[in-house]
Amino acid sequence: MKTRWWKAVAVLASVALVVWVVLPTKPIDLTSPAADVGQPITLRALASEEGGPVRCAIFDSAESFKARENAVAVGVADWNGADWTFVTPPIAGGVYVAAIYRDANDNGTLDYHPLGYPTEPYAFSNNAKGSFGPPSFDSASFTHGDMPTTLSIVLD
Image (cartoon, rainbow, N blue to C red):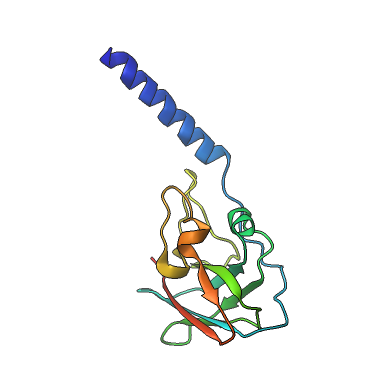
């Protein structure tokens, strides 16, 4: 009985690993334009190391966040001696998620290990964490209203 249980666990773990490696996540699309109404959002990325720009994207729905497509604002922030700061163009009020990563080698993409996990520091608004992937839209979301919004995100 114990042998069958361990075999089943081994098979499920192997299948999960293969799916994780074969179906890697898509990189963030950095081509979507921002809206022209509303107030700006300021993102401050805090990290223990400097080096390379921080790339960011802001999403307005769970679907676009999950697919990493159709961001309402995207951009790059350079180190300014204290942190990385990115200010969006005006964005309409609503519920959003910010995703950022430090492009340590400045190649324009978030690099992944062959097993499928990111090798460069990344983070999300609310400093939300996910298990085996990004956090849910709800756990990382913030409300942007009629006034400018400022967020500080810690890069791990």
